[in-house]
Image (cartoon, rainbow, N blue to C red; front, side, top):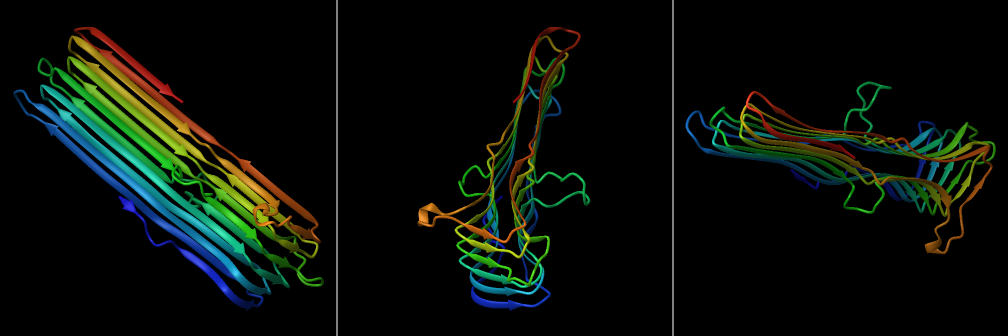
Length: 365
């Protein structure tokens, strides 16, 4: 699957807007499931033969979800929000098998390559809020099993291959599987952004005085699952290898830059949080009732160069010295990464009645 779709966009640009007590609600959201499935098989019922089977399920996705104000003079009279949400699941499944021949080779690949951004932004705008609060939030993967429970995986890569020989008739079975999730490895742009830049936000005296005057929140809940399995049985020479890998290279940022914020005894909150969960499992199995050599190996790894960035600053590159915040009862600038990493790799072999030699290797990184 190769996907480059029109991007969800909610925006107001180059406008003057006044909104009453109902407030302004801007939201861009993407939902759905993208996936690829592949299967293959080869076998003989009797005699001798060579079997070759292969399958590959590859998803290559590139998209962005954005909600923003740009060059807007905005007056608000109630609680308002600008939000961008991503809830897309990506699934790749590949499986095949080779059966009962003289020699067999099988391989399957499941691969998700995904580059996506979720942005909620205010740029070059003037906002006056007489009542209520304003929240700007961007959330990557906001789909849960149930409210308050653990999130489901946002990507599944599953690959499985089986090589089954016949006793006293199969010389060689070779199987290999690869399951990979790679997210945001091809771009340097932040994956999740909640930003106010080159703008002014005011709560006039005698107007709004809520607990939270202005909040910017960027959250990444990406959850990846990679499963790979290779199984061989009943050949003289057997090799089963499985590899599972996740790589997540995300920057999540919430910031106020080169702006003026005037609140009426309210709070200013700037928060960037990453809650990633990466699960990689690989299993290689090789068992035989023949006299011979068997090898089983597997490797599982998770790689996560992550950055959570929350800041209030000026844009030095534009010659602006800084950001001004006045009238706040509390200012919170918070960045946090809560990383869950689960890997398991196992290589198992079995030699039954006729004996021989075997090796089993499993690794998790």
